[in-house]
Image (cartoon, rainbow, N blue to C red; front, side):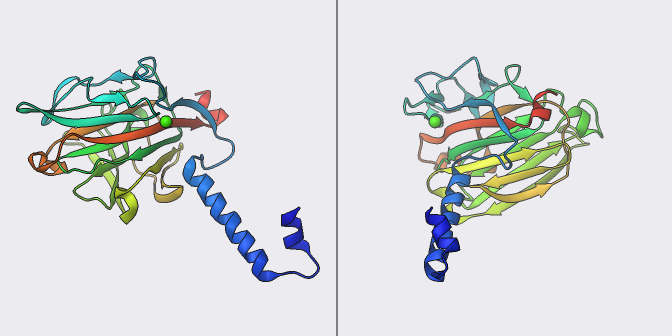
Length: 267
Ligand SMILES: [Ca+2]
């Protein structure tokens, strides 16, 4: 009724109407930031809200336990805080660094859709956080990422570059045929608070979103293979000098949600 009055009143009050429309636009932007697939025909098909006290092992496996890069992946590094968040923590344990990685391989694998997480990044250098997709067959057939799949790094975040969101695609294996496409998006707000990061993956392209805003679109290395989800922290010099980090240091996830169109879900 208010909207009708503002828009259709015979004696319009342009300032009030504009204020109202601006408020409506701001509210709509808020909704987008909270969680929203890019179009109405996406339906939620999988999610973990990280409620409860224990990692849901019906959805996730601990991945690559043991030595990985310059750390040791442990189960203890991956914890729910009991307040709806998953934390992956890098810590020092004697002469070693411990960190963690979880994935949905063999439990949830999807072809196309909209993948989203809400995340608060780590603050220290020496390690990096990532929300990524991987196919079990990546690199098996060289020259055809459609068939073999692609490593889709929906985000990688390095606290030594606190205002950069890194998005990367890798295909044709990790050897001499390796191909890469990537984008760094600058946003000074990344280091503070929570952010919603999403990927829309269709048969033709990828679109990457930060807080509801598209930040990269590419048709490079588009996978037509089913992919699983990985959440990880990794310790290596790409992240900076871990010896200079104040540990423990965590990346926290509030949720991971996957939406598909009806046509995707039937594949
Ligand atoms: Ca949550």
